[in-house]
Length: 378
Ligand SMILES: Cc1ncc(COP(=O)(O)O)c(C=O)c1O
Image (cartoon, rainbow, N blue to C red):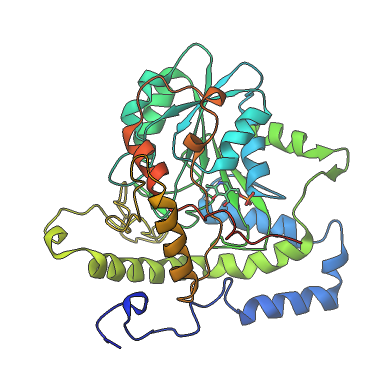
């Protein structure tokens, strides 16, 4: 064994049993579940926890309104509906985006219009937006992905000039801040996910954030059927989320520190002198007299680690991908299925007015899980 090498290359494993699972065991969550059990909240339609969570989410983000729902996917659909996106409309979004967001636009009968991402941080490139607008453009949908942040002040400036609504998907960035404002509060509607991999998790769940009372009311009406909300969050999910939300700010500070360390360690010596943007995980400003964070754009912390670009026209890449996948799986690392972006879909399902070189490079150089390696329900 060579102690100075990563375990994958023959070094000593730092975590022989693999990384810890997610979510981490949390005694406050356990206590909240026990409390919900004894108080009966776990079995109620209309207990105290959902209302309390919505109020706490609104307060945390400093917006007047928040709504919870069954998933981040549903939250994005509700947000697009709030902006009255429907058949024949166009929604401008990054060509590298969370896949279900493209499908949600399709589900509404609208068309995704693709713009490129910044090559240095993989987030929607706001300078490409103007070329994508047509008279059919109804909304911009932008997501903060993989620890990076979209330049929301610029996006909002462009959207306001054009009179176009913005859905800001903060599913992967809850707790981060862009130019002093929490993510999810820049767009006309912000969306969050509480899915199993998210920073606040209930296994499933989602939420929407609003500054505008009318958009809030329209969404609430759409989510309700009479007295009931369809596809709601449950009381038990709200119960486990509340203690996590209370800790989010402190944990974000800790994560930002770890990211800083990792980025420092992973940057090759020749890149050390490069000017770096602020850390994307800069936590929310402290309300009382804290310093204003300035994070706007950040390079991907994984810059330089993009695995295996496909080689033109050979069968070799697949073999390399399978080999890498098998090696990583035996590391042991838990590998999920991941997602490759809409450019892997049928091109006729979207339109892209201008070429998309960084997105194309990104989509076709990420490691897809080779067929046969996917976990299946049997
Ligand atoms: C950016 C983004 N948007 C939306 C979603 C959908 O959230 P959910 O899994 O809660 O439906 C996810 C989930 O991973 C996501 O990463």
